[in-house]
Length: 238
Image (cartoon, rainbow, N blue to C red; front, side, top):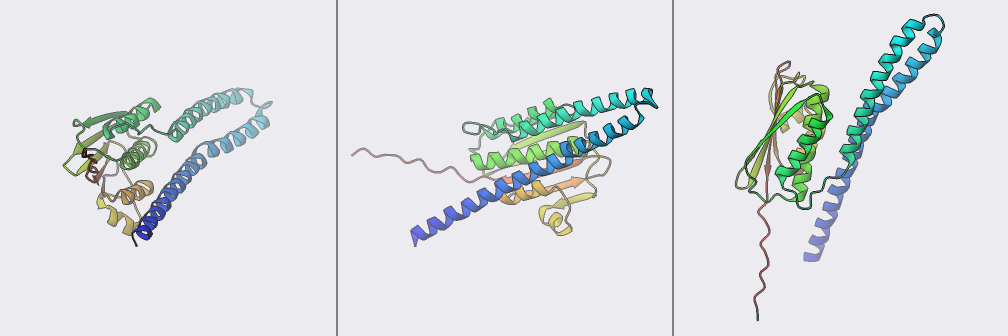
């Protein structure tokens, strides 16, 4: 019975791992579809139009080419961001604090947004699985704040308890389409809120609340339980 239970746990962990990989691939594929692919279609349409008016209106062609060049620069920056997101994060010896700082610095380098991280000195021993999922939540929240909410400033706060930590992300962007404070269950019932972040909150068995004031920003709060560290095996000399 013990061996069967262990095998079942290994099987379930494997399924969760594969599901997480599939969800990440789906998110990346959606990012490519909504970003680079749509832009390349737009390039093709613009270039066909320029060919048609090249002889009749050369001055307008010059202006359109400047616009296309700006689009190409923006697209190049977005592709670099996607590539950076796909690079694995070294979590072997990293604390939760340093992992979140890595996400903040990556968002700062993307430009167009100022992000500040406020945190206490790290005390909890947070497993790598939880560090990785929390990193993805923060990266997604910062991405939403910059790209969709058009925020200029974001404050990220990390507070630790004895058996949990709380991650809070405040931004001054446009907010979500809904107004008020909603829990994960309420967002699921009404089919609102950031889908990817909700999925990761469930995987973390965390409490998630999102507060939105359209036109005046939003707040995301994630309370994550942390299991106690495994007891060290002490060898007793014979």
